[in-house]
Length: 160
Image 1 (cartoon, rainbow, N blue to C red):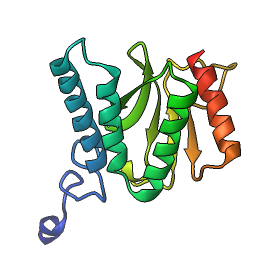
Image 2 (tube, helix red, strand yellow):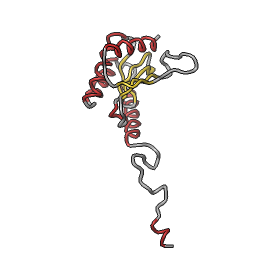
Image 3 (tube, rainbow, N blue to C red):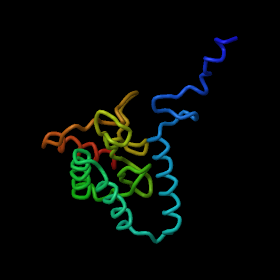
Image 4 (cartoon, helix red, strand yellow):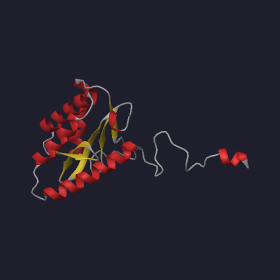
């Protein structure tokens, strides 16, 4: 019986980053961000302009660590310059861009979920479908003219 006293159940054993519900602290924070975004949009009402979305997006970018912030600022500049049909917004606490209220793409900072690299992701509303398989997220480690051209082409295709 002494052995039983020293054992802990799997339910009580601490996890490295997961909670009992199975979500990391970062995932729970993203869900809280999304709930706040929905509440804030409801308070602003249907007259909320694109400027509100951009101000919130720029505030999120400003909170990022330097490397992530640089990529996010470059992406924002590219989108506002070359794909004006996309409206800036935030989505789960991440900078995102929507068309007609539907998120088309988003930037996920590497720091958001303690990842190795930032990503540019596309939703199912993006017009990138190609055959039976296509990428919906791209790792972004640095910004060069070649990457900028590729991203611009993807964004224009995604909008249609």
